[in-house]
Amino acid sequence: MWDRTSRLFGTALLLFSLLSVSNSFDTLEQTETLANGQTLVSLNSDFELGFFNRSTSTTKWYIGIWYTVSPEIVVWVANHDNPLNDSSSTLSISNGTLVLIDSLQNIIWSSSVNLSTPKILDPILKLLDSGNLILKDQNNDDILWQSFDYPSNTFLLGMKIGKDLTTGFEWYMSSWKSSDDPSKGNYYYKMNTIGQPEMVLWDGDRIKFKTGAWVGVRFSGLPEMQTYTNMLQFIVVSTSKEVNFSIEANKGVPLPLPLSRIVLYETGVIKCMVWGQDKKNWYEFWSWPNDMCDNYDKCGPFGGCERTTPLNCQEHSNGFKLVKR
Ligand SMILES: *[C@@H]1O[C@H](CO)[C@@H](O)[C@H](O)[C@H]1NC(C)=O
Ligand SMILES: *[C@@H]1O[C@H](CO)[C@@H](O)[C@H](O)[C@H]1NC(C)=O
Ligand SMILES: *[C@@H]1O[C@H](CO)[C@@H](O)[C@H](O)[C@H]1NC(C)=O
Ligand SMILES: *[C@@H]1O[C@H](CO)[C@@H](O)[C@H](O)[C@H]1NC(C)=O
Ligand SMILES: *[C@@H]1O[C@H](CO)[C@@H](O)[C@H](O)[C@H]1NC(C)=O
Image (cartoon, rainbow, N blue to C red; front, side, top):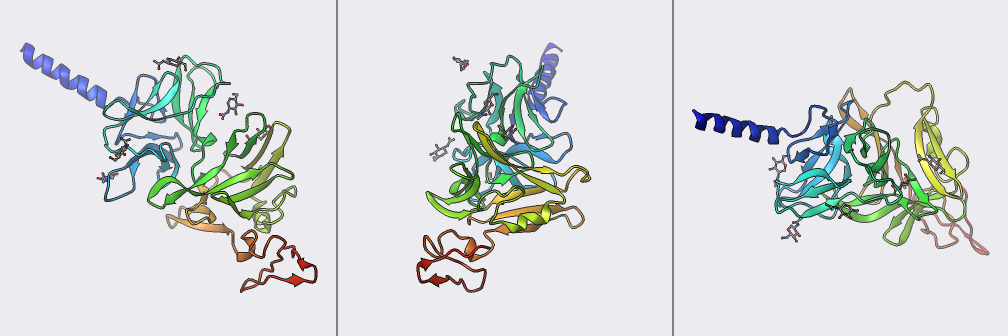
């Protein structure tokens, strides 16, 4: 009798530890762990956080956030360059940081500590409707850390690209190595803060593409941006403290907006993809660089370029002259 009870008790304990994610599915508390196979789901059910793998040959596991309707589209990755070799790792909160611990209790990845944020006694992890994963104080709105500060290859509404001019911290996108390898690839999309704010696509340490200066509602080199101003507002803020780019839905636009993402692909191309609920498919809205003129320096340092096919670099008596688009 005693034996049976203790075995039942043991089973209950085991079950309890397996089901250690609380009944609030968007939140992980300090005492809980997220194991491989378990996920957090945002309240609106748009986003899911959990373990995923990509390669079929070798077992490499990552912590990431993906769309619930389209799990193959991963919008954020925690351990880009430190894949887990086994599936018995867990994600939990330790000492005010988020830690990914493998079966040998090694810390494989942890969220960075922001020294200018006050120490929080009772942190919880929450996956917001926007797709932002935040480590916050249970009792107020103090944020210790957020995934939106560390974009992967995907820009979502609510993120920013820019630079904190006081600390030098940069918010930027970086490509994956390949479509099934989330480790950091060659391309970066960053804000240039010297002179007029402008966005720059880097291929390693080489400039591949510049958007042209900000002209109030869009970047000068991207007339395509004008097409979406009925729905979305593009915002560049430049102060002595911070320069940043963000996107907001216009007032009056019916919400929720369709799921949309801007992705920096491993080929160095940036695309805006929008989810079509009817066909359950992603549609390409636009793509940059969209012609060869957009590739910086194609016609030499002072080169002119016309949007003709094939690439036409105009030579002038004084060398090359830039043809404005
Ligand atoms: C990758 O994950 C899937 C489930 O998401 C699993 O069925 C498969 O075995 C995993 N692949 C490897 C190589 O572990
Ligand atoms: C995974 O295995 C590789 C090769 O054995 C090793 O270099 C790497 O450090 C391991 N990673 C982890 C997180 O254990
Ligand atoms: C918690 O963090 C503090 C400061 O970052 C550090 O001094 C302390 O050793 C940490 N404690 C544990 C248990 O990791
Ligand atoms: C750190 O915290 C400060 C104050 O809360 C905030 O302004 C800043 O953006 C944070 N930096 C990062 C990199 O999270
Ligand atoms: C951009 O920077 C300004 C000025 O510091 C700040 O007020 C604003 O919140 C930032 N935008 C975003 C999206 O964080």
